[in-house]
Image (cartoon, rainbow, N blue to C red; front, side, top):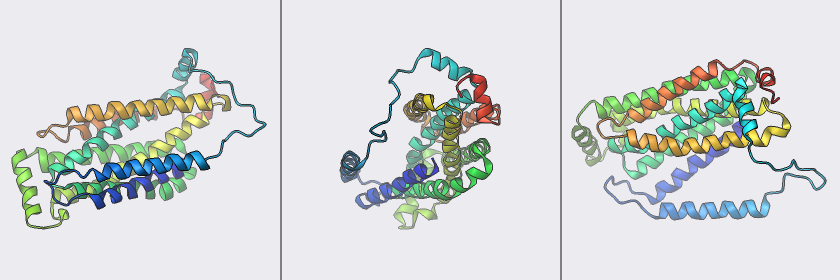
Length: 301
C-alpha cells in the first residue's frame, strides 16, 4: 500500500512540475490550455500502456469467484463488525477531510498572491513530500508500529496540519480585510520578489507537510486494516466498498469545501476538515487493537 502511495506521490510531483512549464508567473495571466492538453495526452498514454502490457491477474486454470452485487446482508455484517465499521468510516471521513483541504488550497495560495506557476510548484512540493513519506517513512515504520498505531499517528498529524493551515489562512488573510491582504501580496509580486518573501506563503509551506505526512500514514493503514480483517472470499467486496466510499468522499468533500470557502473566511474548509478528523480519531480510538480478533466478532474473518 505504501509503495502504491509513493507511486501516486511521484505522479503528483512531476505532474505539477510539467504543468508549471506551460503556466505563467504573472498572477493576472489567463490559464494556459496546454496544461489540460498535456494531461489528456498522458492519460491516453497510460490507457494504451495498460491495455497492451497489463497482464490478467487470474491464471488460466484458476476458478474465479462468482460475481455478485453488494448485498444488504453483507452491509449489515460489515456495519456490526467493530473493525470494519471503524476502518470504513475512517476511510470516508479522512478522504472527505483531505478533499476539503486539497480542493481549497489553491484558493488560499491565490489570496496570498501566488500566480498559477507558483501554485503548481506548491502541489509539486506536496507530491514530493507524499512520495518521501509513503515510499520511505511509512513503509519502514508500518511493520514496527502496526496498522492501528500508524493510523492513529497519521490522524494526529493530519489534525494538527489542517488546524495550522487553517490558522495561516485566518492570520494572514482572514484576520485582515481582504483588500489589504491582496494589496500586500500584490506589493511583493510587483516588486519582483520571490513569493517566499511573503511571510504567509513561508508559513503555509512550513505547515503543509504535516497534513501530507498524516494522510500518507493513515490512508494505507486503514486499507491494510480492512484487508486483514476480511476473509479472502470477501476481499473484493470489502475493498471495493472502501474505494466506493473514498470516491464518494472525493465528491462531497470538495463541494463542502468550496461552499465554506469565502474571501472573508477562507480558512473555514481547513478548520472544518480538522474537526472532522477529530471525529475520525474518536472512531479509530474505539477500534479493537487486533483487527483479526475484532473482525471475528463481526463474522467476516
